[in-house]
Image 1 (cartoon, rainbow, N blue to C red):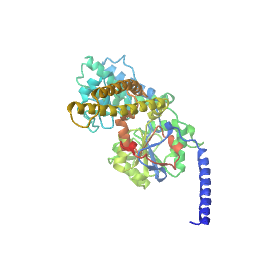
Image 2 (image 1 turned 60 degrees about the vertical axis):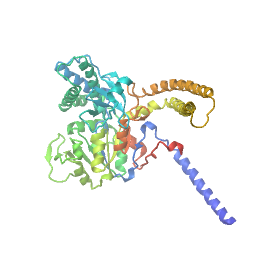
Image 3 (image 1 turned 180 degrees about the vertical axis):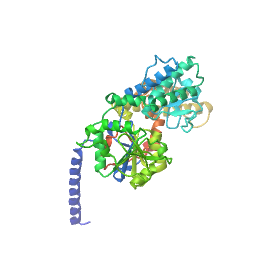
Image 4 (image 1 turned 45 degrees about the horizontal axis):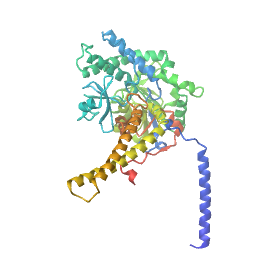
Length: 501
């Protein structure tokens, strides 16, 4: 290369560098999204390629104050049991007793937390924690298989907290022979499930919400803006909910209208609304579809395909997709229920999926002050692994010396002194690590720890989210922070050998 060409190349590089610096300075003017408000990506998603976004309503577009809502659900359940003569008058709702991602073992009356492989890491019988030996005896040969619904019940929504809490408390009463008409833990669960379902079906809970929404609904002023952003970016918005029309209309008016531009209501946001959708069968069955033809909820039989701009009752996801004229991977569905919202829509229609996991905000906030302790725990664990390797090597040398084989490893006395020194330090490390591990086990929830972790591994819930949700986040308004134009890239998958390379 001659001098002239080199000088030209250097000048061009200087220009590129200058432009890069200017771009970096421009980007620095925009603050990064706080961890608790980010979108987390399991499978790369280009939001620009999404043409329509469907939303669930309950605990998705309308978020409830969990203690208030689930507390009332629990109160209705208790009252119905009390009316049948059950000794439950003194029981109180304990929202921290259970959490999303736990599993009810109907066979043994336990509530358990498992890792991603289905191995049980923490368990309670009723409200009593099982000891390590008790847990090993009960589950030494057991892996949780969520397909086996005859034994396992996966608590995958916030709606199930009241159910899980009551079940745990009633197991205690059953063990003390205070429930004379129930003879098994499975029958007890069926009773709790049926009684709570009746409270929902008969509308008592929802009537209380409608009468006093400010007590139960956690308003999010940023939420309507997030939907307006998506709509103005050219995406068709859909509302697909299992709630009936009257409740949906009232809740959406309450949560949205106050934050929309003058003259607009929540209905102006959505190209299509489907109520009483009966998810998950909405994604897999040929349900009858009606048009909601009046504000009062009058239903009109539907003879033609659904049209944009209208409200429908029932029907199927396939009909909605046909009305939109889109392919499956051009639709994103956002909901809070692992089975009804994200699993079925992905499996059957290949829709892209986003899970709303409100608790992730508290979990991430709990981890922030824990960073220094986690770093200390990592350092101690790394030291322990290094010393254990040396300890094992010395034990092998001693074994070879005693048995008279292998290379000469020095005097037996020296070997034993080094082994003793390492053993002493390892005992010290175990004590320090145990304290930190115990503290980590109470982050976010004093009984169960972090929702997405089971010991040092991912929890069963985390594995389910990986398998079914392309994206997860704490609330729908987080989509506004990332914008309708974001390209979400999944992290490079980590492998056990990655740290060595």
